[in-house]
Image (cartoon, rainbow, N blue to C red):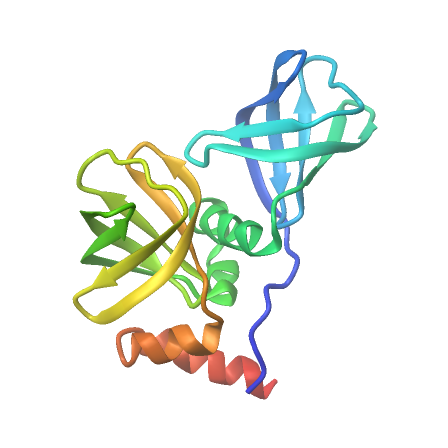
Length: 203
């Protein structure tokens, strides 16, 4: 079976944001976002070198660097690991993308009860949506986790995951297992996603 891979796609965002640098904070308008970077319209000077963080409401801070400036726009390249960027982009697609894009990325809203385990603690949560690559959950109470966590639902066994972004009590998770293993763990919980995986493999 061929593993599904995300196709590079840009999402028109048109949202205010902030770029944090060692020199301070620059307000900006986020024009578009892809899995690998973002195009922004900064309202001030950006340093050409050094680590930057792009903050978009609801998605925390995304580590990046300045690739180039062009007229009044700047292109930023995200510097996180590929799996984390995939999960981040899927969540942005859920919020800003069109229906066709959401189907391509195979993320489904579910609203299932669950729990998140890590650091010797277990916190109840609501699973807001899931894909073969990750999930978005809302914790019942504020909690800071470090390292690997395990997402447990009443419809599937535990799935090890990494927290790739946090906004209040809402977390974006990237599953650590490959898509085939996640599909096996989900069983028949998400048949539409599993069916789409088979269709994608046949193309």
